[in-house]
Every structure is written in structure tokens, then in C-alpha cells.
Length: 296
Image (cartoon, rainbow, N blue to C red; front, side, top):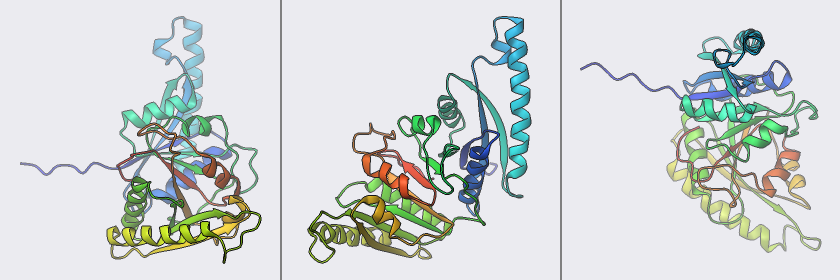
């Protein structure tokens, strides 16, 4: 019998002919390098597809838009680093987010990558309508590239926000797998917003977070590849944003966070803490749905 062909992991890249599209390609390329991932650049047009148009004038308009989008996608493919497999697709849907989710389902992708809104400050997030819709409906992880994101090669470290309470074992498994497959360090962080009278030395919240982070680090180290080092630390400040800003970040860092407990199973719902993190993060973020069990 012939040898079975390996199934390649695929990332959907939401591509538009602007800064967001370039940011998304840069992030997807950084995540894909060293892992054998294929990129699928997807541009979404409003329904219908040209062949499904009811009248000749509508068909002509859709054919023109399709040809224009195809040219944009060719420009996007030229931005993908040499040697990284990439293909282009045009999807027709009621919304850009819906088209990306449909493409991800059809192509059995494990990640959707999009850029931040164009009015975000350099290397900061402003969530646009597409990203916002994905962050409340996607059944697979969504990677968000901050405005102006550019990467000098592959991702060099995964940072996983583990919270201060038990739970989110699925997120930890995804983080361990993602870092182990790339043979890069995994940093576990627990963020604490101190009360008005609290300091690090007298805060029960910091002490609970430290105990939890140490426990999670032990579990992660047992599961990680031998080439992957696992560390844990507590970041605190008067706000979550201040805690984030107190951390050291590399240009090729990626942050993984889990969905809110309000999320339905196997779906994303961005919680309050994650929203606060977005306002301060200088690096890309990957949001993982509840009970998601595949690699990304």
C-alpha cells in the first residue's frame, strides 16, 4: 500500500489591500515558519458569486470585483516569505468575518489571522468590526496582529496568560503544544491588579496567583518538549494594563489567552481581562476558544 500523505496544518489569513492585510500576513508568516504550515490568503466579497448573480449587470459587477480581489491576493502572496506554502481564495458571504469562518471550516484550518483596525497606534490594538465579530463567534483560535506589526523571522517565545484561578487546562495544552512544536520557550504569566492599599508584599491576590502559576508551570513542564523551557511569573500593577506594561516583551513574542467563561463550548468570547490586555499589549495575541483541542 502507498504511504499516506501527511495532512498539512493550514492558517486562514484575512487579507485586505491595506495595512491590516500586511500586518496579518506578517503575523501568519512568523507563526508558520518552522512548523510546516500552509497559509491560505482569503479575501471576502459580499454575496453573490458571479455565477450566482440573478441579473447580467449584477454579474458584471461581481466579476469586476472578483478580478480586482484576485489581483490584490496576488500582491499578498508576493509578501509571503519564500519557501512558505501559500494559496489564495475568494469567498462570498454576508460579512467578512462570516466568510473567514466559512473558509476555515471548508479548509479545516486551525487558525484565523487578521490585522487590527487601521486607526490603532503603532504596535497597539484597536479592534475593528471584523476582529470583533471573530472574537465572539469563531470556532477556532484567532490571531490578532497589532497595527504596524512586522516580524524579523519566526516566533521566538510563547507567553500564555494563565489567570489566577484553576481552570483553562485546554489553553495550557494548546500553549504547550504550540511552543513545543516550535522548540521555543513558554512563559506563563498571571496578572494581578492591586487594590488601593495593597502592595506586592501584603497582597493575598499576589500570593494566590504565585501559588497557582507555580502549579501550572509544573504541569506544563511535564508535558513540554525537552527543548522547551517553561517559566512562570507574576505581573502586578494598579490595573491590568499597568501589569502588562511592567513585563519585558520581545518583538517576536506571541501571547495566548483563553476565552471568557461566558463563551459557549468550542467558541470564542473575549472577556473583560482580555479586553484590558489588548489595550496595553505591544505584541500579537492569539485567543483560544473554550474546550479547543487542536494545535495552532
